[in-house]
Structures are given as C-alpha cells and as structure tokens.
Image (cartoon, rainbow, N blue to C red; front, side):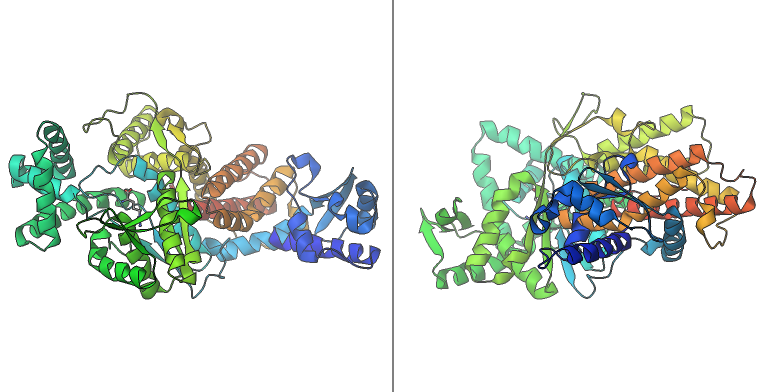
Length: 572
Ligand code: ARG
C-alpha cells in the first residue's frame, strides 16, 4: 500500500501544483494526508481536500472535483468525489499482479524493512526480581518487550535483549537470614523459587514481631557487599534457582536474552558515577545521602548513594546506561516497565543529560498499565499474587480440555495446547493499547469464536490445511482476470497494508497495532473463505489463484504472529 499511496500522492500533487503558484505541500505531505476510510463503501483510500483550501483559495468540494478530473490508470481503478473528499478505489487486478508475487517471493521477509541495518538497539525487559515472585505484573514487560525486539529486528536493527535482573539489594540480606533460620538445602532444591518466596514471606511475617531481624538482614547484606564468601555462594545459588525457573517461562514464550547482566553487575560501578557527578557539581549531600537535586525540572531528587554509601536502584541504572552505551553504542536503549516506574526513568535520564551526555535522548522508557484478574478462580499458592507460570498452566489446561471436548486426537496435542494456551494470553494482553489498565478474563482470552489468540491461530491453521489439501502453493502469474470476487479484492487490500502497520507499531512502540491488524486479516480471510470456493472451484485457474491468495494470507499472519511472539500452529 505504501507504493500505492506514493503513486496517488504523486498524481494528485502534479494536479495541485498546476493550480497554484506557490504550493504549500510536497508530494510526501500528500501521501501522509491519505486516509483509510472507516467503511469499505467509501473506497480504499481517501484524500481530504480541505487541507488544500488555504493554498488554493477554493472550497473543498471544488478542489475535489478539479483534482478528480481525468484520474484513473492501472493502479487507480476509480475515483469518487464525495463532498470534500476524493475516494479512491484501487484496481484489484493491480494488487493481485503486483502484491501477490511480492508476498510469495519475500515470504518471511514480507513487511520487513532494512533501514535499521548496522545500528544497535538495546531492549531492557522482563527483568524480574530474583527470589521474589515472577508474577502477572511481569507479563507486560516480558511480552511487550519481546514484541518490540521482534519489531526492531524486522526493520533491520541488531537487537540486544537485556534481562536486567533484580539480583541485588537488601532483600538478599533477608533471604540469607530466612534461609539460615528456617530453610534447608533439600527443601529449596525441591521447591525451587516457590520455596524461596515462602522463606521471603516468612521473613516479613516474623519481622513484624521481631524488628531485630531487619538489622540482621542489613548486616548480612553488607557482608555480601563486601564479598563474604558464604553469603556470596548462597546469593549465587538463589539466582541460579530463580533463573532455572524463569527459563521455563521464557521457553514457553520462545524468548532468549542476549544478556543477563542485572543490578549486581553495576553496584561497584556506582562510586565512579558519584565521583563524576561531584566533579560536575551536580551532587548534593542531603541528610547524609548523596542526591541530585531535580527541583528545577519539577521532579523529586534522584538518590545516588545511601547514608552508608551503599548503592540503590537509580544509580545502578545510571551505571547500566553508561555500560550499555560503551558496549553497544546503541541507537536506542528501550526500557519496558510498568508506568509506576516512569518517574524513576525520567530522573535517571535527566541526570545523564545533566552530566552533559547528549545520548540521553536515545534512552526511551516504554510504560504500560496495570493488570488485574477477574474472579478468584485462579488459585495461587503464594498468597495474593498470581504467578505468571500459574496463569500459563491454567490456560494450557483449559485449552487441553476444550480440545478434548472437540474430540481433537492429534499426537502432539500437548504441544498445541501449550502454543494456544500461551498464545491466548499474549494475544489478549497485547490487544489493548499498552498504557491502558487491563482486567484479565481468562474465559474471554480463550474464546475460539471471539477476537482472540485461539481464533487467530485457528485461522492460521485453516490456511495451512487448505494449502496442504491443495498439494502445495501453485506457481501462478496473477493477472487482471483472476480477481472475480470482491472478497478476494478486500483480502488483497488488507494484506497490502501490513508494511504500514509494521511502521506504525514501531513508531508508537505499540504491539497492539499488530494484534489488531491480525484480526483484520483473519476477518478478511474468513470472509473470503466463506464467500469463495477455493479447492473446490471448478476452473483450475481460479482454484490456483485462490490457493495462492490463501498462501499470501498465511505468510502475512505468520509474520505478524512472529512480531507479537505468538507461536504458529499448523494444525489445531
Ligand atoms: N526489576 C525491576 C522490577 O521488577 C524492573 C527493572 C527494569 N529495568 C531497569 N533497568 N530498571 O520492577
């Protein structure tokens, strides 16, 4: 569609330029003015002529009719003047002839770009806190972050996925105390992270009545900061146990990280930062703590070092930004966290800017809203938080049941149930603008008849089975005579929009653009499927064309699934 927009813009601009001595807009501006009408009946693209009223000194309807005069070529099938709008109908034959060969030839690469080539993008996402529950709140950072990584890769960037583990801080002092008092090796080996969380919860319960525990914990953490051997060993072990479990969740999501350098990697790099801040006159001592005053920027101070000189979250992030800049020389460094951390990142970015580094503008925080879960049906063993793995397990189990009810007897039905169960959650989550708070209703996410992941995966499986039944994708040279049904034309048009949607999602750092687009493709494909005989078409030429069109829909769906980290299901 980008080519088509350019073409229409060029043709219109030529006419416009002939009507005025000093054109206010360029052909590129015109391409940007073109809109997708809300309703198919109003054409495939619309041009709002009121934008030109000022420079042409004419009313929009007059402009519209002047511009429409004589328009029409192999791309522009028809133009209607409706009020101040020009409604364009694209020649379906052109779409078939120019678009289908491109999709079929590019395959996995259809919709991609290469403008990111040779540039690095760092994405900091997921980043759970070790020995604390990996809960539903982390779903957002994990799937939005990974989706943004996929999007950046799709336009050519070299991406570095960083899991900035929360593996440092006073909670480790608490863990060490709790483990020594109430834990033992076998139990933790067997129970994994749940056992660690249980110890952590117990610590807090006990500390309510026995505040001395807090002092003990602080002392143990200080020992850890000073590389005490036993504490270091315990700390490493806690991390290993946690990672093992995260990896299972990441595997279900098909996520791999390029770096697991977490907060602990940066704590000894903080003093140098504090030193530089001091040299640059940015550091103030406030009640013993070192801070950067940000009053001028309407923000509370950014804490750099605590009274006792130990590091805290913000300074570790400042150190991490420097490390990443030096290591990856990034074009962008993206941080995906809940909106609750927006102030934290605003402060960190500001401090780096005040230190005089103009690359501070390449640091981007991508916030998202909160998640809640409806109904108490999702049991949890850890009190009032819902663990991500429990949500996945519940969803997979439910899909398994649905498959059983439907009498699915495939060999790999467990694998399918997992792909569909996890996909349902990803899709549901990524259906909304990321900043919106969402209330999770598992039944809705799993509804095969709704606008859900299972519905999308089912549509994908349908395209696969048609192609399989047809014995593969026939080699055809689409031509004008092949498009005989409006449903075919509508599907072609929807498929042509994919590259634009990729750019839209990237610009807004918004995976939901892709999720919504997937639903458009599914709707257009299913409409085509119900309107047109595909394999059973009498005319072999028509049949081959429709199978090839099905293959195009499959390619686009598959590519789009990849961008939101939803697995492709050949069969359901
Ligand atoms: N561990 C933090 C949390 O769970 C998120 C870390 C985000 N990344 C960062 N560089 N601060 O809330």
